[in-house]
Amino acid sequence: MGDSSDDLLGLDAWVYLVMGGFFLVFFLFPFSAIGSAIPELSLVCLFGGVVPSAGIVLYGAYRWAVERHVRALAAMAQTYRRIKLDEFARRAGTTRLKSDQGLAQAVKRGYVKGFVDRASDEFVVQEAVAQQVFVAKCPTCGAQVDRWAFPEERFPCPYCGAGILVPPPGAAVSPATFR
Image (tube, rainbow, N blue to C red; front, side, top):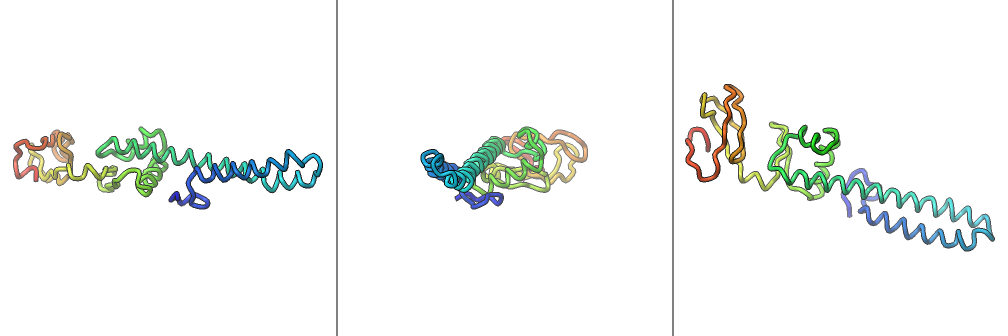
């Protein structure tokens, strides 16, 4: 079953499509076969079956499009170890709110494993967490940086502005700078 809070019955998109298609065929048969002989039956079939069935099919198509969008956001998120949420929304071609909601749905449905680091306003993929290195001090000015970063990542020191390059795994580092 689907797990979306904006879904009517909590069903997957394909269930709506199949269910609506079945009812549509089921109500179109009497409408076309007997509808001209008994006009009252044609009205019952049309407004009691064909119109709601077509609505279910359209809703299934809408849910299918939403599901594709959530899966696309999850696939995009998996291509990064960490990405700023504003940059993620820009690259997704949507608003920050919609990309945050889609990313939350992708995590909730298990399409991508990760979390939002609110301190840095970034989405971090779960597999990348083990690769991170804690940067305690700036190697240039010695100021406390206290930031997690990935190997071979470069970021500016918030105090002196010097670029801090996190060394690759196995490289010799100063124990005071990197732990």
